[in-house]
Length: 190
Image 1: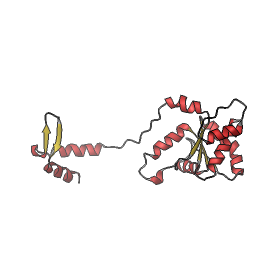
Image 2: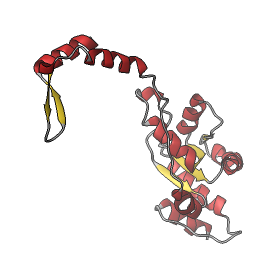
Image 3: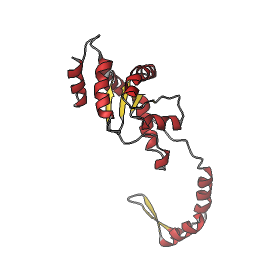
Image 4: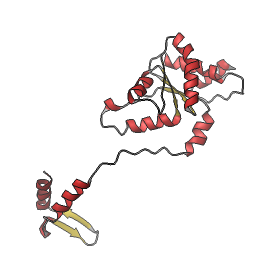
């Protein structure tokens, strides 16, 4: 049962196993097989307790087989996250993986990213993660920038405009700058 389950998971399928049939041990075969390439494997769990517990328990096996194991959580620093993702096997929760993905795509520099190219994932409790938790939106926002100086400068500049610096189309309600207006704006904003 465990070998058949591992083959199913390795091929990208969902393997349903009854209590006591050894899901955790089954997963180790598919995880190991996909981690030996060095491209990384994520083991996705529903909570941080399970991530830490499974990484500790199964980590002994993986390390004995020559692989590195990392744990990603909300409590670790950016450097620790990067190190966890660079491990051969990374244990994490689905929400932390998603937030790290979003944060990585908000960075201006590639060097600030923590995740590496995605390769393979084993999802524990797949029904809970892909169905139940999929209903919870993952929303992230960047830190608000203080734009008050820009607004004040724009307001000041608007008073320097004259009627010939823009045109207004009553029908479409669109205002456009003329060449003279663009020149004034460029000078005003430097």
